[in-house]
Length: 129
Image (cartoon, rainbow, N blue to C red; front, top):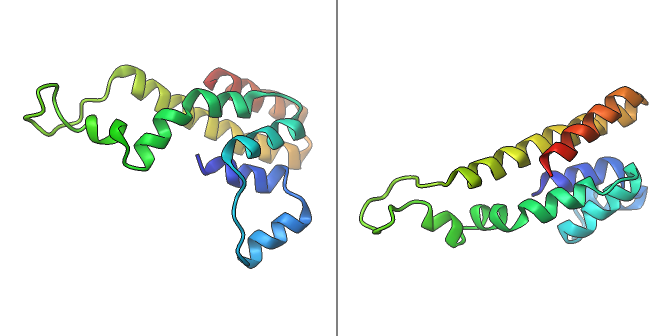
């Protein structure tokens, strides 16, 4: 869920943290749940952490080659290799994509100081949680 890292850099990171990231001098992101909470504090809500909590397990396994990813490549009897994703997995992936779009929109709206756009972005993110 590295899109949260980019959103955190844009919205919640201190100048020093941005500088450390830019210099790549041993910079490491904090755990994702901490980044999500920091973003939520900045935008006065809980949607980023809610989206993270809702989607992290499946997305982590899909990204890092966990059983979720490997198991979805075989039929139930294990004899045929083909995608076998359940509808709930696809919905989770789409919700995460919607949350990502909302986060990008939220970042933009804050810099534009556009309250209507900020509300729209928060509604999109909330709908993905």
